[in-house]
Structure formats: C-alpha cells, structure tokens
Image 1 (cartoon, rainbow, N blue to C red):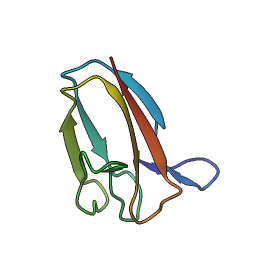
Image 2: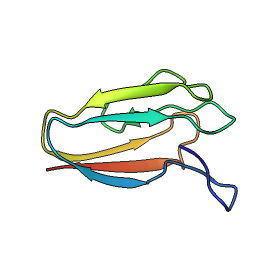
Image 3: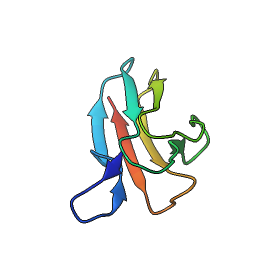
Image 4: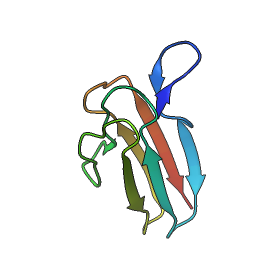
Length: 81
C-alpha cells in the first residue's frame, strides 16, 4: 500500500487472486498510517505505520473485499481459489 503516480493513496495491487492456504503480507510503503480491514470483519490490522506489515493466511475460498479504516476510499480485493 502506498502512493501511486497520481498522488492517490492505494493498495497496490488493488486486486489479487491467490490459492487457498496462501499467506499475504501487506507492507505500508506510504508516509501515512493505514489499516487492512476486511469489510465483514473477518480480518483486520492495527494501524500500520510506514514499513510495518500485516499478515493473513486465507484458509477458505471466496472473495474478500477490504479497506483502510482511516481512508475509506482506499479499497482492495482478494480472490481465493
């Protein structure tokens, strides 16, 4: 997560497809504080300062939409096969 070339704060990539059992690690590459918060509350990070990480292992297939609690326009999606 971090700034893109247009100065918008985004998750990069905004959508990712993985397999069941895969672990993702989000890294805050921005200068601000962000969270990784699944929309239904299935997982969520604490407030991540620059260079801090959040890990989650996806045990179940499905689509997981998430956002930053501090910047609700910042959204992402994980598709688990």
